[in-house]
Length: 76
Image (cartoon, rainbow, N blue to C red):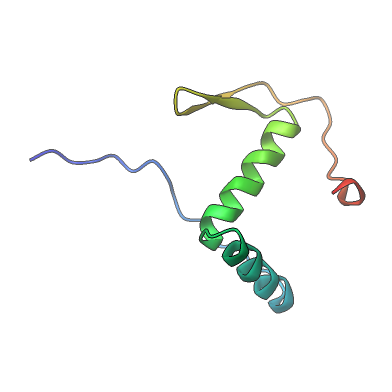
């Protein structure tokens, strides 16, 4: 019998209730699960900030993080 290796792990995050509802709506509007939307958002952030390169053959290519990272919500 062949066993699969797990390629993801769980992460518990606390969000304000109104943000959770907006996240559910955004995921539904995009025809995806909340988990899938959060994965896409975090992936886009990590690529944008230089922590990770874009997909190559189905795998993420990790890159060295930049010297300084600041989340600038005003640019979103």
